[in-house]
Length: 454
Ligand SMILES: *Cc1c(COP(=O)(O)O)cnc(C)c1O
Image (cartoon, rainbow, N blue to C red; front, side, top):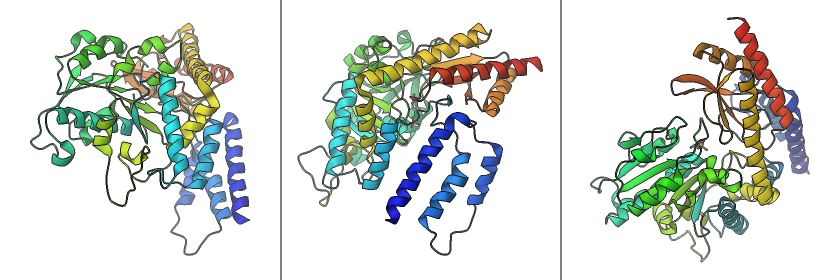
């Protein structure tokens, strides 16, 4: 069985890769990146044996990756992959199911339905919500905002899917100053425009100021954020959402990673009231630690979501069951619900809470350790995000570069309220307390080396 030994080889190489992560540099070495030029070959004239293809991929490709699947990657907001989710993903790749229609894949349709029910349960969102399994929070924002556009314009007597936006009643979009760029991109893709939005000022932590909200009405989409990408801060949901909905506005929450706070008793207060919104964008490849790509567009009003995304054609069999393709922009797609189902199965309610909780505690430990060493923490650490300055902007930039090339861990930079900062995002199931201590020690060592040369 050539296929059996090929897959065994792939599984073995994958395991070797993962086992090697703790002892390798988190950033790929310059040599490993330079060696990627070995991929620059012409299209092979003739077939190459699959074992040799896999060997090339591993020998040239594996060293050139960033070790984001390990426990010491703190850049952006990047989850790793839980073993159960990885293994499920590998099996589901063998199934090669088109997850768009029940008739093509009863198993993946069933798992998607169950995964959705469990997600709503874990996040304390209404059990009757509809949702689509998309590539990430960008497309979750897009899909939810398409539902919002559908719903508000339908109420105004306009069928936007049929008529388009030319000549349609005006919709207003209200966002916070700290809105994520991908939410603006979604507005751009939907014809709602990046620039024709009203910006609401935010406070020192990046939270929307409820006292600065403009008047809202039933032609308004209000975009809130649960988990600021720099500070982890939450817009004041309980204060804003009831007022906005009473005015008839559609409230969408970008909760890419912050929505998981709802699944953890110690953090749930941060996000209280979020369940009153109309729609929510969630990432699974961030804090749920499933393989890329995976996000969920959750919507209170099933008809609004289906109105924006459903298709009909005679050959697309319509049964009584939930048709997965009716809730997402795509028709054919991979079975993302399988990985999510596996992650939720393996963690259970307590495991999800423990993972979120642990990462939050680890973020606080980073902040304490850096603060104790005399460095400035620029925002309150409420979740899993830390912003630290090592002095002036140039010094901070040099420390970040030094930490990246040291290789013990990886952190990126940002500018927060005019100041250059290093971002630490703790979002990986694989991060142990020992990883945190090793990384903290490396950060402090590099920072004192940089400061000594000034
Ligand atoms: C990461 C993130 C996004 C974009 O998510 P993708 O999964 O990269 O598409 C949107 N909003 C927030 C708040 C995020 O953190």
